[in-house]
Length: 279
Image (cartoon, rainbow, N blue to C red; front, side, top):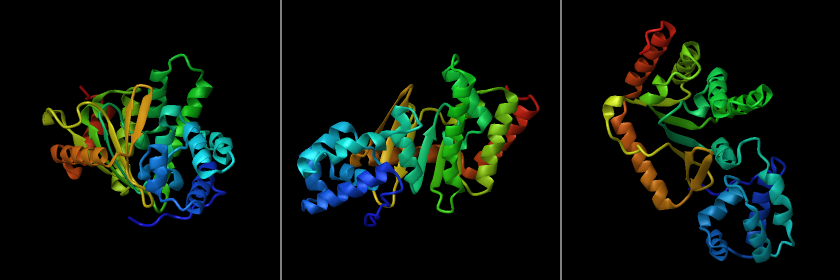
């Protein structure tokens, strides 16, 4: 793995905390593993805090101040680094996603957020929150679409998605919305923005029937796995867990249609939606 990057402390509160944590740890003569043991976490977790891929929680900030004798610096500043426009259960994953060099995901129920059109995202949020004012829904949609800007960057991550056929067959927002959503995926594929495979109904039982998976790899930090449920989410960095989920994803790609066949299927489904032939 490449050595750690020098973060620009002015780029964000989290970058500031990461840079200061590395400085304070090295001043104490501690390795990431040694500091992790004192905080009852892994050395890789410390590395992710320093790289800015993990959010510093108040309890860790307090312990860091004690162990590194930093006079309350981390406790005072971790709240600023924790501010996010995303829901609390997803904020850390969204911020990690923006720093990832590779993203692999399985989406069982809906089109992944990085692929969503504004109309599709609006229909999803309205279903989640039917009584929320339109202005709040507008903000949620803007934030979701803004996440996809990482795909416009010259250093965009490798994005490899296995999308369950159920996510493409579920009519979210009506035929016109689904037509636009599927054509948007087609455009991303054709522009080289993503590798997409469809997991067809005909695949039967598979290795990820219990839910979605998102794996993220980084240049300067260990990989992460994100699990998401209804209103909940968690990041895992345990190496054995990451290896197991990577194997799960490999099994899914083996069961899924090839990228070429998947593209043809998505194009055909978009045509079906457009011409009202969708069952």
